[in-house]
Image (tube, rainbow, N blue to C red; front, side):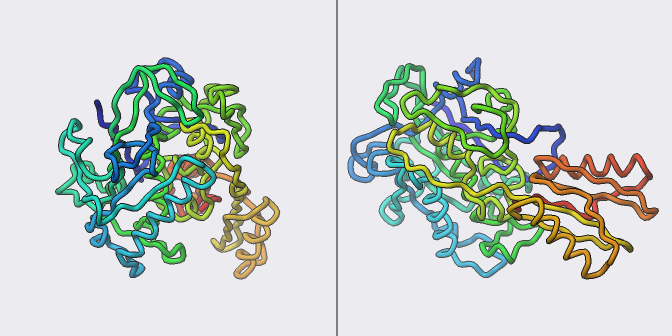
Length: 399
């Protein structure tokens, strides 16, 4: 038995990735040799007949039962949201992940099961509901000693020689079955629910919850395990068709991923992920772990475009969440022309953009699937033209 520790990091890191589409699952304790083996043996919630509350069985039967701890009322919401609002945000995020799937359902057992976080992995079968949600202080949870970590999910699994999948077929083992999950939110962070109330240093709570639930189901960060990402092609933002009877069919290892997916561990502190909902990558990861031939296909959000326009005297205009390059450019041009008549489009993009400049007129820009990469590359591009460059603005098309 082991505990998998999964984090959401809002910190800077280096390295470049090509924009494309792929997903990854948390595999069998690092022992998988190939991307397909990683998926085939990945831990997942098992089928069960009864519910945990009624018969003590942990699994999909009766729905995945979750309990919300009273500590959620101590989260710091800058927009005046209450603990009831936080609970509704969690419930809404769970509905997003269960939409269209006949066997993935989440049932609130708050007040009937006391949330508990096991100190030892072997205690997990008697600790709390199947899924528990907490707000935890850095003093009470060591992972939050790093202020860049806002959410932390722990799930527990047991290894079995085989497992009946959600499509009724038997998967050979060794394969893990998830028996419990605990989701912690950092009480030292600040949060908001209203997308219009966002602040740079605070976290959009629904986006964070949506991300953490990906880990509850057994889905990993695609940027952390690039060699185990799976895809059917390398076309960005398109649907990945999962064969309900043979979920490995047509999948191949891909070093690319979609920076806008909910499971992606960077840049999910803003509201764009919540507004867009699950990407095709996210849905494919869910359906590959939990295949079923009665899954209802639900349309995903279209690719969003952004644009950056610069005018005279340091004036600039920008846009995001546009449905086309033309719409993005027109919106950014109009914003620039409010203060300048000489406006030039610098870039239209579907990923993240950064613009850096110094006091002597040198500048540089960059586009990347991740905002931290874009900031670094923009600064380097500007530094080739002059010293003391700094990032003036950065944003993602989907945020």
